Length: 336
Image (cartoon, rainbow, N blue to C red; front, side, top):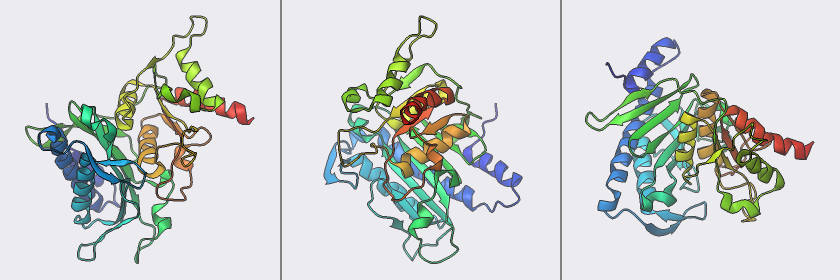
């Protein structure tokens, strides 16, 4: 059977669009190369002393892991030299990452989480890279903050790489969602999951119930609903929680279900929750909506949130459409 590579599929879509120039295809190819390098390093992490902590603290106030730092450096190094970006933003960097003047500049902005789920690195749980691509709104001059702080529905592409039993790339350019699996024998991502569609309703809920005492009442009602029965007419959902956003999301995208990371009262410095709007919630929300699902902060659609700062945080309810709408209904009841 003939296998389709990511590049082939991109070129097919490029031909279908009379406005396509090929620059976006080149951009994704550079990102794919960076992910291949990260995948290689992840697969041998325990052999080359890149597990554990560096001793540094990142902008999120979290301890930086060696593999986090390595992945961040690889992506920045590759993408700065691509000649297709005007700026980047990473979960690991406090400020916008500029493209040095000695390199060519382009029209795109890349926002990424270099290694999501990094707290699971040392125990060999699947982790991933999440990315969001925006187009700058001004033609020239320094990149302004308003060009980066665009709503999620302005993304031109988004997706993730997951480094697990196999390495996969899942992405969308606004025309469906496709999954590719890395064949290490040829070094190419090959189409393995065309036109991914998330089930309308799932059988799994993913949430860290250890934080129950820190949740508000609507969150407790939502979780209680998913784990309860209704006079034996409705079976309880199964709890499946890995603690790696990209892994939990990927499982539910393929099989159906809901992932929840609500706000909680543990840390008054993070009243809106833990997850980052720009580099985590927005790209995954774009993917899930293109696959027929939904994503909300409990009150509004994730992709409609107006960002006000680069490392803004948000609650997240994401997955099968019926399940997300049910969770959100408990918040609407409270606000009615």
